[in-house]
Image (cartoon, rainbow, N blue to C red; front, side, top):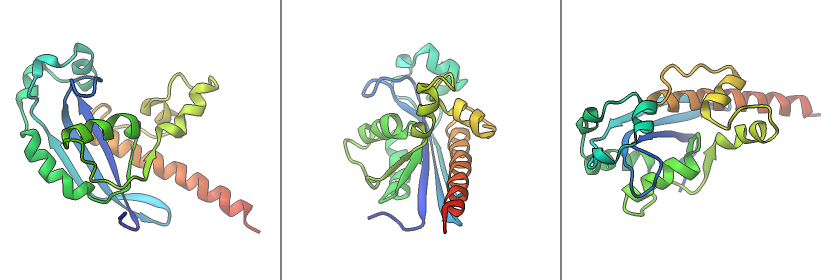
Length: 186
């Protein structure tokens, strides 16, 4: 059952893009109250997770995440991280950028196929895809969406930075939507 008036904005960083082969090494879940239509961060759960197979990390993932292979041995065990994360995600409506096709499937695998979150998902990638399809943006990435909306990502390719940038993108998108609805009202 979803928790009324809240969403959890989620981002993961991984050792690569292949589900079932690469691992989650960082996760951030921002629990946000929805007040006057805008998501406001009210609680944060950011976890650094130790890679079980650091040798599987791709050079591209290490470069994007700004991590050295040795640093993948830092952090907590995945089981401990999942025990801390489960109550945050339990029954939550989850939001994120590319969360539906990447972050949540990676987490579902980590949870052994379990999906403690609600089935409603808000994915800001859907907001950036039309711009990309019609050639108005170079990609459907979070970076491109932030540029279009005038949002600065203070710490790109970190779970905390990307979750907060997504939160601020949602605030802009929802404010624009509320403004359009107000203009359409009789």
